[in-house]
Image 1 (cartoon, rainbow, N blue to C red):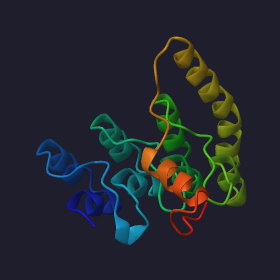
Image 2 (image 1 turned 120 degrees about the vertical axis):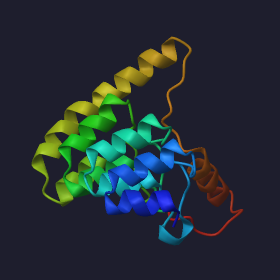
Image 3 (image 1 turned 180 degrees about the horizontal axis):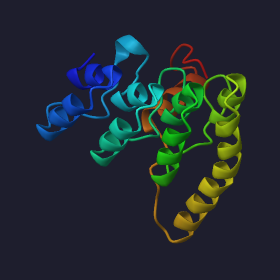
Image 4 (image 1 turned 30 degrees about the vertical axis):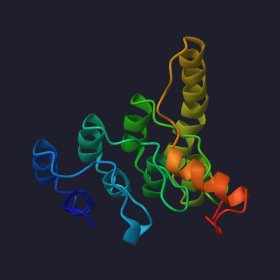
Amino acid sequence: MSELHQAAAAGDYDQVQEILRRRKCDPNQRDVDWGNKTPLHWAVAKGDVETARLLIEHGARPCLRTELGRTAAHFAAEAGSLAVLRLLHSFHAPLDKEDAGGDKPVRIAQIYGHQECVTFLKKAEPEGKAYRKIVANKGLSVDDTDEVWEKQCEDQREGKIGSVTK
């Protein structure tokens, strides 16, 4: 676990800010010992809006997935953090990706009984899809795909590697 992972997991905004200021750690580094979680996954799992915002503003990609295919939105939904889900939506983060078990963040919020999050996600999902369609029609791209995860899934389908959980 990197120093940035530790600071994000501890909810230490000032330390996260200092590490990012010094460019000491990559905000998208995956921690293989903790299921490929990034510092952003740790921050949103705590419901830490300000640290999540800081990480995203310094290049953290909300579309990155853990080894179980969970995005930052999955962790925010599990934590019941409506504020973090709103933040992710404001940055056009994908809120509708399925994890390895086929669950979208809205389903995770339902499972954990976070009704406000469910209501928000049911509205935000189609807004996100509409935004991606508009962007695509303009010939632009949106950062909503974890290339490493997609490659692992492709390799698994082709039998190149063992189970990746999807």
